Image (cartoon, rainbow, N blue to C red; front, top):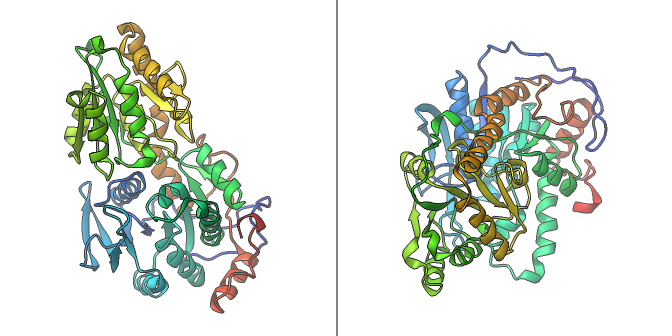
Length: 451
């Protein structure tokens, strides 16, 4: 069990010196990761949580996962992720029917259920990946038990609202409520992270908590194979969920504007509720025979597709990092991406690809044409730059940073902006625990802009 020393710490205020005793860096920890989406779900947050769990287990830590069950079967059992065994605590869950596959833990039982798991596991640290249900229960329980708490945000309200069936006129109110809920969970954490500096700045502004640390989701670049063989065809590839926020209708329309002489192909790797609409759109535009939607593919096939592609396209406007874009870069691909959210952190305009104004179909088509007609020597420069940029996102660096945060150590890394100091200690933690015991959080003053 971690102990904490007394001291005042208020969200948004300057951090005091870290007085927490350092643990020996070689000592294995018992780490509990909480997530609202986890394997077999296929999305950036679920994939990151799985890779984090596997990487930590590979380093000798005792890793536990708390996440909604993927079916009606729930309970505790071992699961193997990337060859590593972790303990999964799968919560009783329901289907969210506006969404094609999402399941969620029952909100009104989450505190009771997570409390039982915390008491049984007795982790050294809790790291929640989402505040919505699982993170809410775990953050409250961890504070009550004096367990070190780390929070990571992968959440964008717009991505969730698309699957709520709420009328658009209520969106602004719903977004305010969503960020208010986020504040109530993240304010409890000693450190809060998000995958990029842009995403961290976004969260700081949304819930007025400072600092939010920028820690990349990371990938293992050595798992991917770049090719510098002269291209023999023009293949554009996208990887991700086939959903509305990815703006794939605009990519399809831009593809239809390309010069037929390029004989280009568009491969959309993934699945989702927009598959039927996109096939219909491609046929209406006369390019149905050159657009392929693969559905889910195994990792080996994904890597083969990336290696053989000419360019990777990411038209989404709601990416907090984009693991798929990093995988494409590790495969040596130039990128054409929307100039939105965190994508400019990965795509350096005219260096490893091009940025286009979100929603501008004509500009997207021009930028794709720029890549597909580029001389091989210039194309190779773009490919090498993608490989260079993605080096900073090595998964081992990410694991090093989180291990330090789990031990309460200061983080000194060029991916972190500003010094790390524990977020909630001493008097502030005591106030939180008192408030939680009586079922109130109003003693911890939230920011008025998110209330």
